[in-house]
Length: 170
Image (cartoon, rainbow, N blue to C red; front, top):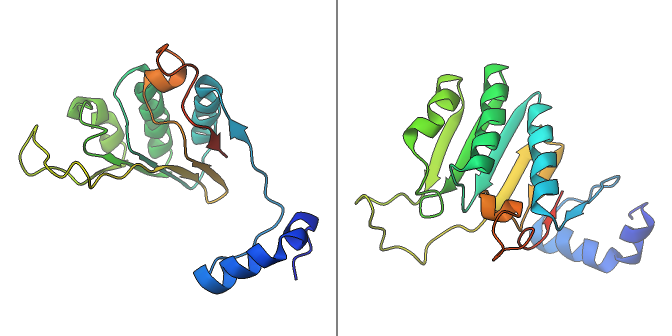
């Protein structure tokens, strides 16, 4: 039986998740919800710079603009420090990143992977088979999920998107 008051009040949901999905119950967690892209990405970059074991970054859209460059710089710094770094994005959402944007990260030992890369450059007919995930795991202690992709438009630089997209939870 959960010892946390919230988990105890929702014991039926906990039992369902454990029995149906094999989920594990953990306590003493904290969730922060970000509605502002600038605030979220400033915090994410600070958390990346503080990483000591691993940083795994997985986004649908990852642009090589100012925001993407800041994140790549933080990942490169951590890779140079011996931290296991993986940067992963969807081929369609990251199609604007140049190999030169990633050269230092790779030279520092960072790993880069692309989801569902097209066999024919500039043409990808599998447009319905995209991954729209937005996940970051840092040292197995901090996780970012949902909402914002990596691009200046999610940083509040594009009036069409306002200060960000759907909220991100940390």
